[in-house]
Length: 318
Ligand code: NAD
Image 1 (spheres, rainbow, N blue to C red):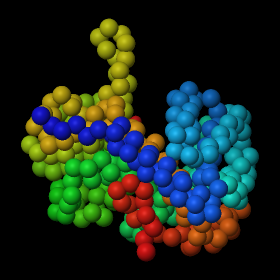
Image 2: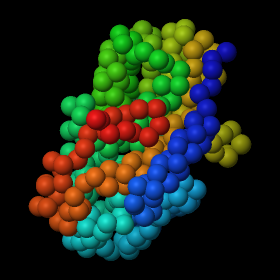
Image 3: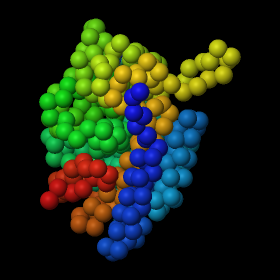
Image 4: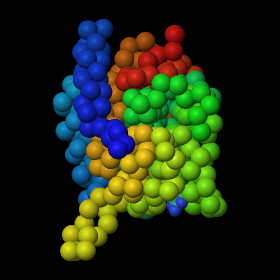
């Protein structure tokens, strides 16, 4: 029977470390770590995600400020709000809930967030730091995936890791993190031929395709570790619906360890957002004033202290 990697328990443990780090921030002269969450429009799923994130903030001692903007908000108004949050010293993390309404360029909006406050890790500066292995804020889902993997793998060197999916928020960053640990990484996607032949040779499979039960038992070699990132809602025969992942977990008894869906990667994603926020707050204690506009942001970008991913809170590279 494969070990179930308990994402809820690991998220709880990470939240305890984050709460302790929030206290440390205060002891070192900071006030309260602050997260600003921007939600534009009325998307019901986004509404649920934002509420969940805000509730969790309270539990770990982060002050959260919600900025709900009507769907009619234009790009300039949104950029102005980000500029003002960039310049607000009580805000250490800024999160723009995606998707944004039509007519707003998401890439432009995400690029406007000061890299030091980019707790989602989507800014090109943080992406660049990740790809060069020089730290920065790491995207939450890949960071959580690595923590789950770390709970069952000590040494990645030479392991054959296969990532299914090449998105900017999961597939690409998790591939870079695995590469950083010196795994032999194969990134696959919708156009990859004979995918099951590739996964069958893997010691680690990270499935982030959004394709329900794509990964079957015969795709996985005995003893492999499988991380299921996918979240899909599917219909039951009785007309109700349920959430399933990318892996047919009931066929994976021969794996060494697997993450369940729900209760695997999902809880870790939010816990990593909180961790990133407190980490950004701690970093702000040793950084100059945050930028107030895009040109000022360039100054701070070059001053970002590199961080490395560790067990729990990302720690500055000394
Ligand atoms: P995406 O749609 O941006 O990317 C999906 C990737 O999978 C693409 O690169 C695509 O080429 C590949 N792909 C799709 N179908 C495939 C197939 N049949 N075979 C091989 N490759 C295939 O999605 P995303 O944003 O990376 O998210 C992926 C999944 O992870 C979704 O189900 C999403 O809901 C879930 N997700 C979960 C969390 C979490 O916190 N648990 C966070 C982010 C995303």
